[in-house]
Length: 271
Image (tube, rainbow, N blue to C red; front, side, top):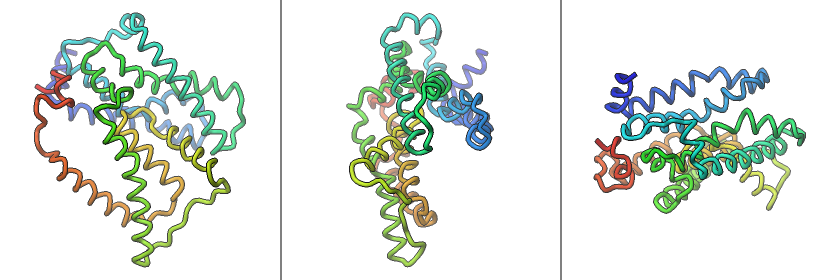
């Protein structure tokens, strides 16, 4: 086990990707089993799979920061703030799931649905949110962006509007070039109720990623629901261009300085 830990500490980025894909696609069979075949008892695996990136990040960060060891039972039992965050997140996620399932899938509002979500679907997400109050210094620094917005609010706002903006721009460009005609999803709800539907769909889509990445992912999944027939070739080309511009603008090829918030609070990862 010590050899594995040493390997992870030496190669944290590679380890993160390996573990992420192992969780996400290792449990990928649960997607079809639950959505297509309605094998609802596999819901816990489905929930863990969708939270793969955040769970992998917590694990790798815990191992890489050799000064802290996660002793789940004892440390969580003594960490009142983390327990409070866990249950608040669990209740909030349950409410979002029930509302989404009712508004988008016409499922009835029943106690059984709420209990199903509370006990089988939301615990992994609640665990990730509660990691913002972890006793592990590096994990707390990484997951703290979920509850402390000061250092990431600008990027979070950019993530919120960037993907929908590119999607809308690709629709306009597609019409201008005479390519695939654009049309929105058929929806009889307009005005404020439509904004409510968009909010529910957006909240239902984070599913465990940390704030900026989760916001971008949720925004993408939400806009795709309401604009289902995008010109995907043109949209993908625009995404590549924007990604390259972001890399150039932020000089992402350069090593971050030690005083940068992304590394200064995680000594194990900065070495």
